[in-house]
Picture 1 (tube, one colour):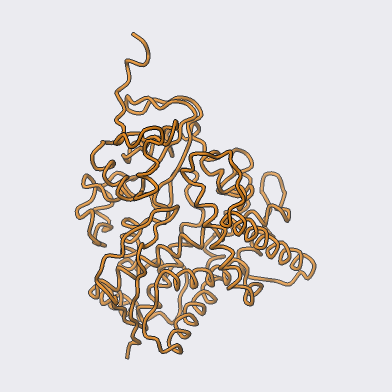
Picture 2 (cartoon, one colour; picture 1 turned 60 degrees about the horizontal axis):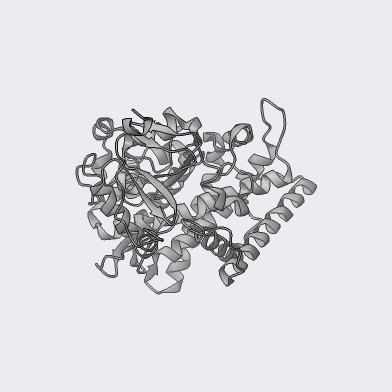
Length: 451
């Protein structure tokens, strides 16, 4: 008997069109393509784009196999190659010894003591953001745009404090152009053609300008030697305990770009959906307000206090269940693998669809509803660990997970403590899946200052 015959037959998605197969389905409506196939094709299936097969692992156990059990056989490098141009050799794109060294250097920058030093400035940024809206007298905000604005200002106050104050709007535009350009490369069928489209020209120019700005700041800081309490300062002062080496300027640029790209759009989209859901559910706002009162207010905050807001944390976790920061994670096999009897060929693209495992009827009591009690301790314990993985998993789990959670809880409690939120329309805004999850239609929210 040949080896081929001992494997289970791998289900495929709907056939699609001749030659291009599922390309049109993916481009036209990625969300419904994945939702339909994840709900009907079982724990593992594949789809085609021209002659390429993409395997989708739609099971917590299979996700664990890739991220933990056999992680050395699954590379990120080729899957995340679309980011090389903007991130260089940073924590997201590097592998092997380079990644291990970068992780050792960067890890102390995210310690609790370092995070505590950032909180006051971040809190002031949130207060300033809402004061700006009070003064506008408009009474409502377009959430996606405003959360992008707030997320960038929070990053500027935590990553490169003060140096970007007069450049934040230009940085925001450049980040948007760069991210749009990079996102457009995903599921691209023909990779060899290099056409200088307007999107590409804007994206390349934006990347060059952002890196130039960061390079100038690093050089200035090295020359002036002024003390700063931010993530850039933490990285500049960090030394690898094994090699006794620190990051050079090029490496620092790569890591700062990684922090901006990993921390800007992902945080912004989660906060977009969090405020959409909070505005849609006034009873949730009241429970958050009750929790704030139980804590005796939020005049003085540190990492421990922020992370102790259990109900608010469940609201955030449930938001990231329905709308995870990254809706799917990618890997590529190095050698052929056998997952529960399914053959995965070598050099094959793997998709781990977090958003759809997060909505599986097998693991969630109310899979399509907003239900923060999904994250009560006893319910978390009863589920497979990888039924929920908004920050990835295994040794490559996002280094900034606790920083991001702290940041978003801080935004929620500070905002809800001062304002009431109400949707302008009950219409479903729809979804657009790129690398992150954007609303198809703009979401407008009315804000009213509490008495």
